[in-house]
Length: 379
Image 1 (cartoon, rainbow, N blue to C red):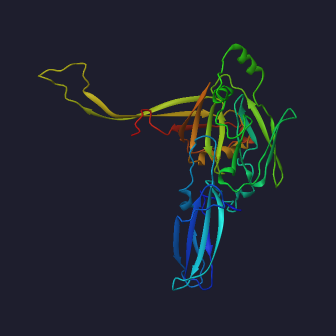
Image 2 (cartoon, rainbow, N blue to C red):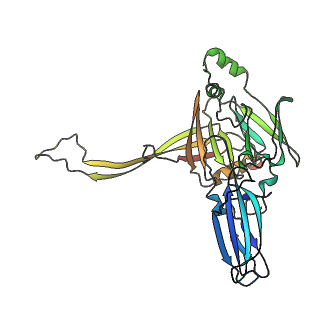
Image 3 (cartoon, one colour):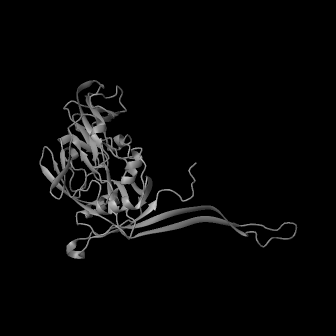
């Protein structure tokens, strides 16, 4: 089963020696692969230039309208698409045809890899080192198609194990694996998990001393095995006392949510746009010196944030590349007991890739704009 990358073109072709035109009929749905809808959402007819010529259409943009890429918790549901292709003769009669079904993600390939296919990819992110914030969850987006199993290690000892099997439900294609509990956990810190489970988190000196000594669900290596081989992910857990780390989540090349922490310097800014006019403040031949002569209206503010990553490994060059190319990015403000997810846009428009050979240390600073105005003006 090939997976269609909807942010890259997908061409569907058909050839028959007697065809005058080809009818392409598409169905798109979620849920079980074996339970498609009865109606087609698109029926397209395209004439051949000459009788028997190959007829081709591009379908990614049509299907992409049905992909939801919001961040309402950690879940990604691809869509199934069924193609019915029928060759027609000059009178419009069907002379032959065929049908096939594919899975679709909001993913893409690079120009130099046109045959890139997620079907044989279990690990749905490019870096093989994860930088995790101490006592915070990290999530591994994986594809279940190749029957993956995961083993989590700490100091050479097995901490936990997980296994997933191939499934024909769209909602069970992508999993966000975490050690914080069972399922797609929606919280990040230990305090949040206590509140999420209905408990009361007591923030006292004894607990703070405990968490300074121990970490929740700490691991340093993950083994992932699937039908194709065995792979290893290194986990580096960092503590940051001076700065406030920020978690940025984006849709990566594989069409799934990926988290990345910015551990160092944070700078906030605000820009304001407004209009003004000169008012008449005379009343009964006099005026008050406290009245505004130059008056502002339509005042709109937009805040931005500059985040520094801290020192990373070189494989994060690819992560930043995908962040810059992402169409959907979010910032999570984490506090004790709750988290707030806010939409942001990448403001930085160019990046120079760094290497340990040229730059000694790899570190990036990225600027983001809030994807909303400071004053609530949603109507």
